[in-house]
Length: 330
Ligand SMILES: [Zn+2]
Image 1: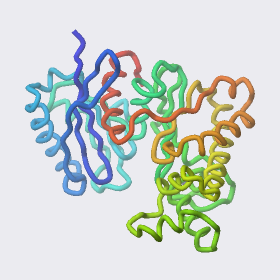
Image 2: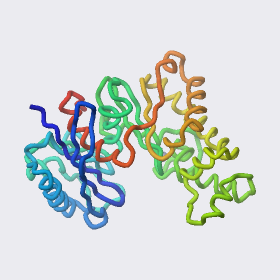
Image 3: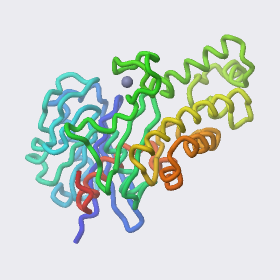
Image 4: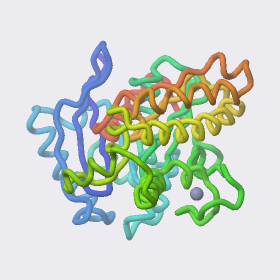
């Protein structure tokens, strides 16, 4: 009998979360979760200790033993050798240098362990169980502070020669453009990453551009200028915000047109906050993409919203276990 439970571990900036995930005939769902603060449990030894304790709590609640799981999937915020389950390094957490997470966890739990980068994990959630389910070729893009990506090529997640593929956010969009967090200039992330978008709007408001956003912030100072608020303004008919999203959509459409020419995907899945903007973004994006990609590629691609929201990290990590079992080997 196929094992229907897996645990997905999401190592986020604020919390480390473990979710018990069930595979059903309809798909996948998180049935319970536990967690702790990443700050206290971030380094390798405390991390392992916390995972052990949290696994105990989570499984005991449901009367399960680790060997009854299809496996444990781990999404790490950094560079991972997926073949060996080795965490090379984490840019934002100290102490991680070539840590064999897979073998360490296998010794503790005696069940299959899959380790990957967190964005790749989220991508696999969408590829195997979400918006790109059933596709053979798809691209995943998460639009947040940074711009992360994942690739599905010929039915398998693609990691590249040394596990650093799909860094879509760091493709050059404007030669000699703004400096990116990665140290290069003009990466697409510097054009449509959240930080830059918000900065641009703040500058426009300061310079006196007419927009509802100013009133929205003045009326309730607890409202922060963030992507969600700019989306809300567009939905309320603010011409500035609508024009703003049109511009973002055009940039993204143009950029994704190039991705289509390279990879000819069936679907491009957009996750993260910007994915929630709706047709103010997707309309101009689709029109520009169709105009800029080769017709053969443009005809076959659909740009869709990601299915999994707040639990995308947990679902993604667990999906790697289930996906691997059903042949989606990397
Ligand atoms: Zn960059």
